[in-house]
Image 1 (tube, rainbow, N blue to C red):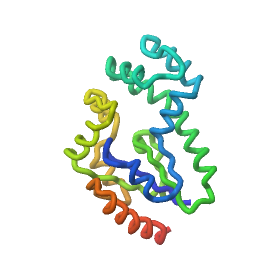
Image 2: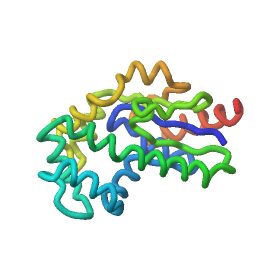
Image 3: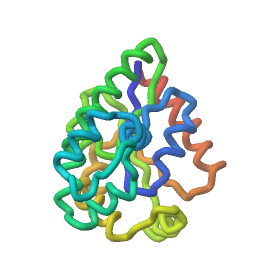
Length: 192
């Protein structure tokens, strides 16, 4: 099984690209949302650490956001608690799909959490900052302060680009992205 890992800046279109390959996708952000809604142990741990912010189960995203905005150290604390759970879910996903030709891992903190393995095909999604900002501003929960905190815990784009096997330039035109992916998919499958 080939593991294709999609990385890039927040808002660069990673999830869209990941879903366009047609392989099973593990989306870390979606898993985190599910954990907020359904993992009672995570809730108890977080409530213990952040009693001022985390009030009730299921955890509301706005409680998480408030805690991060009030103290940037809270983002690292939340990350330390949630990531071992996400990692377990990723391992289950990989086991479940072990007979597939390839899988896609859409994990924003792939390098930061030291999940990278030799042999993983890393695909960096590159996009112009002005287009990314324009897209992010359209999101209902857009918050510049919060975005800046998330950026601080991520490795720099140049680092990710250097570590990547391939780079796709996302111009946010779905037909050109699909064309790039078709070519890339063929190339990846031929080299393995």
